Image (cartoon, rainbow, N blue to C red; front, side, top):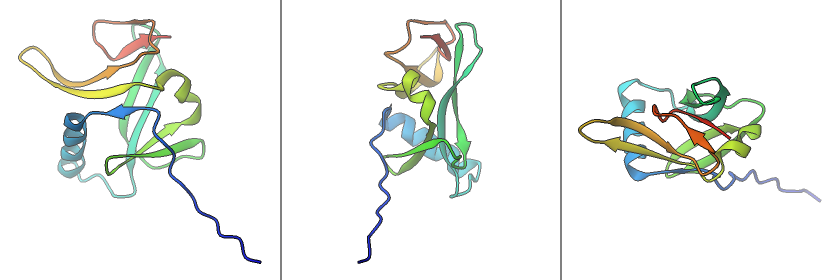
Length: 119
């Protein structure tokens, strides 16, 4: 008896707004990001509040979870889910501010720059 193996892409623990997806796709086109790369979302130690967000394009690594948000492949190291579950990445286009924002319900404090937090 032959068993069929189906690899499923998991449900994403984060959200990406439509405006952020548009900007991410623009970056992929402008910088000729290879189709083998997905969006890497994560955290690293540092920043003025303890952790900084990681947002960039990369290939899948051994400890990554893979998600689809819209038609964008997203990679996140499994251990980062604790800090990022429920987070929304948005794109802000204003007079004073322009760029990606991170709305993280797990952050107990965040700094004025908006790219670091403590949990």
